[in-house]
Length: 123
Image (tube, rainbow, N blue to C red; front, top):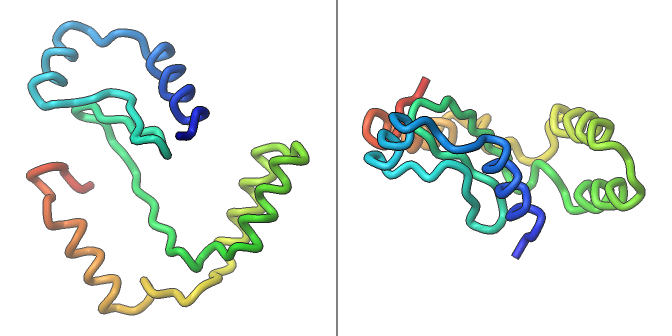
């Protein structure tokens, strides 16, 4: 159990406050959950909310880089500096580049489009 994630979700719920009655009714009828977690990442589910999804393949961030990030966090390196370093590393293109292969990219695109218009609307 990741206590930090649960605390983050509690804080976000408190910051957001209760929804307006009409918004709450619309959310309930659609099964919206607001801020919630399954224990590893915070999620936000509310009608009309735009969301961005980022995919990272497992080999795009090798274990030694993860170790370096953990060490930076332990040493108190600012989150902004750590993210900037991580972004530069990811932009350098480590890993096998699986999604650069047209057949793999097409498979992912087909998967994303499968429920478009049913469970979500792609922009």
